[in-house]
Length: 499
Ligand code: BES
Ligand code: MN
Ligand code: ZN
Image 1 (cartoon, helix red, strand yellow):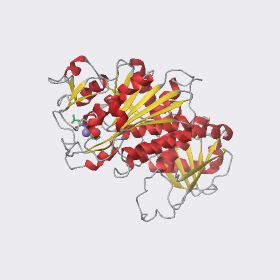
Image 2 (spheres, rainbow, N blue to C red):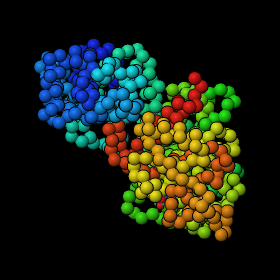
Image 3 (cartoon, protein in one colour):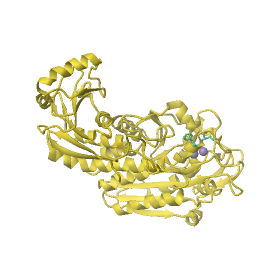
């Protein structure tokens, strides 16, 4: 993994190098070690704050030349707002804000992980470290020339000054694996579709074997044998053969039912015969954001040796128009035996997921399934890029996802399911059709999926607005966001790991 940032831990009393980053609350109060490090310069901070209108709001930053007597080049004061109400995601953001202050010329930084009330906890300090790395991520594999000011490839060297360096170091490793998982997911989403097609995607998922993940790859022939006609119909117009990959991490009790994550992996979605308009079609290289998240999540869980049994399953296809492509009007038979009339070949994600969900429900009998899919443009209209849409047949699972979303900052918003919506996908020729008309497009898509979970506790996350193309944030400057890795890692850590 190429990393632009190296993070080390030092005690709060250590001397600062490079840019000094400190924290204050919304009363501009500093922690004791911070006040000591700034000495008489603390007064200057107050004056600079008032001149700049800086009030210590959470995530705001005051950037000043380091005053006399402070052994640093610049002093950055980050607001912590009301420290008592800070969540994990706030500390990630602090790390992101700090990393945003690095430049090609200024690559050394000391961050004092201290709040007015005293040293941050190890978890909080480590979240800052994670935020630094998430912010510094860049996808520049295909750039042969670096822009002005970018050359040199200088690696930032950051010291996190903490209360307990040993405890922080211990917490750093697992959190680092989760960041690695996010970066893997971002890389997959950012890759161009001529490079990342189903077989190549399956090969990359296979790299998880190194971490002890068991990998099973279903090729077209074995999917035909299983009767996965819904998934195979989507891929039949492509020169690139479809794949399904099943990943298993067995870190829990032997024989205990796993938790399962299922991802839509449409490596490119032209729409098929119901072809999309040309505008922004290139974005459809990211239509495998759900599958990317599942691979990144499996990496995170396996690398940090999560004490849980976890299944990850991804359906990998390319949706192309061709002489052999599926037509509107075709009727396909899914692995479940249910038949589907194809109305619009661009509603392909649900067809892929139908067979993978059914496969996972039947073959692995999970405690629950969570699927992630860049499924509908309608969810982007409804929720924008701030929340993923969530649909669930299980209130406990939905509530846990909601809570994990608030804590991680990868937020979800629950939308309804119901028999009135389900009716909209009944077909006059088959058991169902693959679109439900203009109204409630994200809901009818979810109703379609629900017909393939066979009563298994399940949640569907429509990540069309959050997986890619969202505005840049303090912790993500990349097109592909890696959305969902941190959310689901937290869900597993909070509820499904043996203590
Ligand atoms: N992959 C798209 C959904 C999408 C749109 C993701 C924009 C990200 C950004 C999906 O396969 C699709 O084409 N959905 C159609 C469904 C319709 C034909 C019922 C849509 O949303 O228009
Ligand atoms: Mn589509
Ligand atoms: Zn799609």
